[in-house]
Length: 154
Image (cartoon, rainbow, N blue to C red; front, side):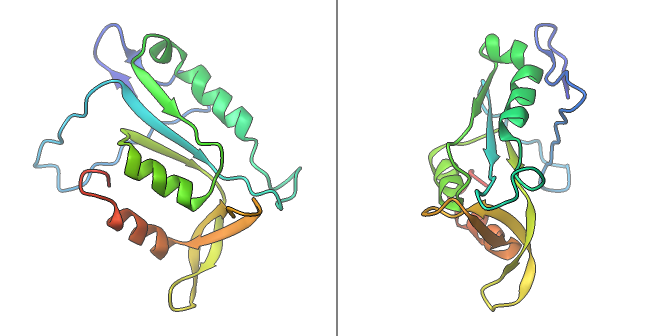
Protein backbone atom coordinates (compact mmCIF):
# COMPACT_ATOMS: atom_id res chain seq x y z
CA UNK A 1 0.00 0.00 0.00
CA UNK A 2 1.41 3.36 -0.99
CA UNK A 3 0.61 6.84 0.28
CA UNK A 4 1.33 9.63 -2.24
CA UNK A 5 2.82 12.02 0.34
CA UNK A 6 6.61 12.21 -0.28
CA UNK A 7 7.45 11.67 3.41
CA UNK A 8 5.22 8.60 3.79
CA UNK A 9 5.59 6.48 0.64
CA UNK A 10 5.11 2.74 1.00
CA UNK A 11 3.46 1.66 4.24
CA UNK A 12 4.80 -1.90 4.07
CA UNK A 13 8.16 -2.74 2.53
CA UNK A 14 8.57 -6.40 3.38
CA UNK A 15 7.78 -9.21 0.92
CA UNK A 16 5.95 -11.16 3.64
CA UNK A 17 3.73 -8.25 4.64
CA UNK A 18 0.51 -7.53 2.79
CA UNK A 19 -1.99 -4.78 3.52
CA UNK A 20 -5.60 -5.18 2.46
CA UNK A 21 -8.20 -2.44 2.35
CA UNK A 22 -11.91 -3.19 2.33
CA UNK A 23 -14.45 -0.44 1.85
CA UNK A 24 -18.14 -0.80 2.63
CA UNK A 25 -20.78 0.36 0.21
CA UNK A 26 -20.96 0.76 -3.53
CA UNK A 27 -18.11 3.25 -3.87
CA UNK A 28 -20.30 6.30 -4.49
CA UNK A 29 -19.96 7.77 -0.98
CA UNK A 30 -16.58 9.18 0.03
CA UNK A 31 -15.33 7.44 3.22
CA UNK A 32 -14.78 9.67 6.23
CA UNK A 33 -11.08 10.07 6.94
CA UNK A 34 -9.95 9.15 10.44
CA UNK A 35 -7.36 11.33 12.14
CA UNK A 36 -3.69 10.37 12.23
CA UNK A 37 -1.73 8.45 13.27
CA UNK A 38 -2.76 5.30 11.42
CA UNK A 39 -3.92 2.94 14.19
CA UNK A 40 -3.58 -0.80 13.64
CA UNK A 41 -4.69 -3.67 15.85
CA UNK A 42 -2.55 -6.82 15.57
CA UNK A 43 -4.62 -9.55 17.21
CA UNK A 44 -2.95 -12.94 17.53
CA UNK A 45 -4.53 -16.09 18.97
CA UNK A 46 -2.26 -19.08 19.48
CA UNK A 47 -3.90 -21.47 21.96
CA UNK A 48 -1.60 -23.38 24.31
CA UNK A 49 -2.98 -26.81 23.39
CA UNK A 50 -2.00 -26.65 19.71
CA UNK A 51 1.03 -28.70 18.66
CA UNK A 52 4.09 -26.54 19.35
CA UNK A 53 5.96 -27.40 16.15
CA UNK A 54 3.11 -27.62 13.66
CA UNK A 55 0.04 -25.84 15.00
CA UNK A 56 1.05 -22.88 17.14
CA UNK A 57 1.58 -19.57 15.41
CA UNK A 58 4.96 -17.91 15.68
CA UNK A 59 3.40 -14.67 16.87
CA UNK A 60 6.74 -13.10 17.83
CA UNK A 61 7.93 -13.55 14.24
CA UNK A 62 4.67 -12.16 12.81
CA UNK A 63 4.91 -9.15 15.11
CA UNK A 64 8.54 -8.63 14.11
CA UNK A 65 7.62 -8.71 10.40
CA UNK A 66 4.94 -6.07 10.88
CA UNK A 67 7.14 -3.78 12.97
CA UNK A 68 10.02 -4.17 10.52
CA UNK A 69 7.82 -3.43 7.51
CA UNK A 70 6.36 -0.34 9.16
CA UNK A 71 9.51 0.81 10.97
CA UNK A 72 9.85 4.18 9.23
CA UNK A 73 6.25 5.38 9.70
CA UNK A 74 6.22 4.05 13.30
CA UNK A 75 9.43 5.95 14.10
CA UNK A 76 7.93 9.13 12.63
CA UNK A 77 4.75 8.70 14.66
CA UNK A 78 2.59 8.10 11.58
CA UNK A 79 1.60 4.56 12.65
CA UNK A 80 0.66 3.05 16.02
CA UNK A 81 0.25 -0.70 16.54
CA UNK A 82 -1.81 -2.13 19.41
CA UNK A 83 -0.92 -5.74 20.31
CA UNK A 84 -3.02 -7.30 23.11
CA UNK A 85 -1.41 -9.75 25.54
CA UNK A 86 -3.87 -12.57 24.80
CA UNK A 87 -6.03 -13.93 21.99
CA UNK A 88 -9.37 -14.12 23.83
CA UNK A 89 -12.63 -13.07 22.17
CA UNK A 90 -13.43 -10.81 25.14
CA UNK A 91 -10.14 -8.96 24.61
CA UNK A 92 -10.93 -8.40 20.93
CA UNK A 93 -14.37 -7.04 21.82
CA UNK A 94 -12.88 -4.85 24.56
CA UNK A 95 -10.37 -3.35 22.13
CA UNK A 96 -13.12 -2.61 19.59
CA UNK A 97 -15.27 -0.90 22.25
CA UNK A 98 -12.40 1.17 23.68
CA UNK A 99 -10.61 2.18 20.46
CA UNK A 100 -11.15 2.88 16.80
CA UNK A 101 -8.68 1.38 14.34
CA UNK A 102 -7.88 2.11 10.72
CA UNK A 103 -6.95 -1.53 10.21
CA UNK A 104 -7.22 -4.85 12.02
CA UNK A 105 -4.90 -7.80 11.47
CA UNK A 106 -6.22 -11.13 12.74
CA UNK A 107 -3.54 -13.81 12.95
CA UNK A 108 -5.22 -17.04 13.99
CA UNK A 109 -6.39 -20.43 12.78
CA UNK A 110 -9.74 -21.14 11.16
CA UNK A 111 -11.74 -23.86 12.87
CA UNK A 112 -15.07 -25.64 12.94
CA UNK A 113 -17.34 -24.22 15.64
CA UNK A 114 -20.98 -24.46 16.73
CA UNK A 115 -23.44 -21.66 15.98
CA UNK A 116 -26.25 -20.63 18.37
CA UNK A 117 -28.41 -23.46 17.01
CA UNK A 118 -25.71 -26.08 17.54
CA UNK A 119 -24.90 -26.41 13.84
CA UNK A 120 -21.31 -26.77 12.70
CA UNK A 121 -19.85 -23.85 10.73
CA UNK A 122 -16.47 -22.30 10.09
CA UNK A 123 -15.13 -19.75 12.50
CA UNK A 124 -11.89 -18.72 14.18
CA UNK A 125 -9.84 -20.28 16.96
CA UNK A 126 -9.50 -17.93 19.92
CA UNK A 127 -7.87 -18.59 23.31
CA UNK A 128 -9.99 -19.59 26.31
CA UNK A 129 -9.88 -16.88 29.01
CA UNK A 130 -9.33 -19.28 31.91
CA UNK A 131 -7.00 -21.86 30.38
CA UNK A 132 -5.42 -20.32 27.25
CA UNK A 133 -6.53 -23.41 25.31
CA UNK A 134 -8.61 -23.65 22.11
CA UNK A 135 -11.89 -21.73 22.07
CA UNK A 136 -13.53 -22.01 18.62
CA UNK A 137 -15.97 -19.20 17.78
CA UNK A 138 -18.46 -19.55 14.93
CA UNK A 139 -18.38 -17.01 12.12
CA UNK A 140 -22.01 -16.11 12.82
CA UNK A 141 -21.09 -15.27 16.44
CA UNK A 142 -18.26 -13.03 15.21
CA UNK A 143 -20.69 -11.26 12.87
CA UNK A 144 -23.03 -10.68 15.84
CA UNK A 145 -20.14 -9.28 17.87
CA UNK A 146 -19.35 -6.74 15.15
CA UNK A 147 -23.02 -5.77 14.81
CA UNK A 148 -23.24 -5.18 18.59
CA UNK A 149 -20.44 -2.60 18.52
CA UNK A 150 -21.37 1.07 18.82
CA UNK A 151 -21.86 2.90 15.50
CA UNK A 152 -18.64 4.02 13.86
CA UNK A 153 -16.64 1.17 15.40
CA UNK A 154 -17.63 -1.55 12.93
